[in-house]
Amino acid sequence: MVLLGNWQLDRYRERTAVNERIDAGTAGTPAPLRSTLPAPTGGAGTVGPAPAEQDEWSRVTVSGRFDAGNVVLVRGRTVESRVGFEVLAPLVLDDGTAVLVDRGWVPPAPGGALAMPEVPALPTGTVTVVGRVHPTESGGNGVDRREGRLETRRVTVDKLARELPYPLHGAYLLLDEQTPANDPTFRAVPIGHTNNWQNFGYVVQWWLFAAMTLFGYGWVARREARRAAGLDAPKPPVDRAAEPVTPA
Image 1 (tube, helix red, strand yellow):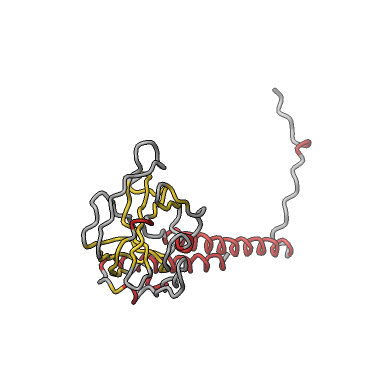
Image 2 (cartoon, rainbow, N blue to C red):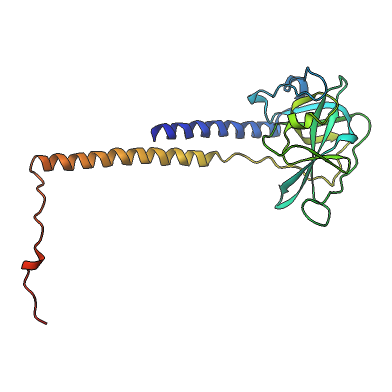
């Protein structure tokens, strides 16, 4: 139980550090992309190194051209209690590599949560974006192509890279600012803090269990020791048959 409490304490510290990085990224001055996210070195379909843990959620800036032919729709995303799509677009840099930029959230078309949404057109020419470094997600059931767009359930960078004709950076960017400005149709994707206090509650719970176990063991050991010394002799059983019967 003590070890489980220590493990939860480590989880509490890890999640607290994530929340601190998220808060720091909110007001931090954006740094150049390459100072935070290493460039991919392979060919088309490969992925670059993941960002260092301390660089996740930091603000970066980068310029390039959006690839309108490989827009990515991420279905089943909830913003303000509505299910819709996050829209990602590859930003192709001058060296031929690309980084995925999450432009924001859009609602589905009438007909259900999976109906193909109306996606605002990408700006042409050179675009400068400022965004947060979001680590790649895990899981998902692969990538499909529907009506000329890639579609997936999770932003798994390595799986998306296999569908793209250029090497991809090992994380994606949540868009904060864009020049020229992003379409107002998009809603910003909120960054939720991790529930670190839940882990702290588990710490207290496991350590209380450990203390109760030690107290209970001591109480039982003391009782048995007193009995062995004849200090707490067990009471004789009561003979119910010998008790007088009160007439009705």
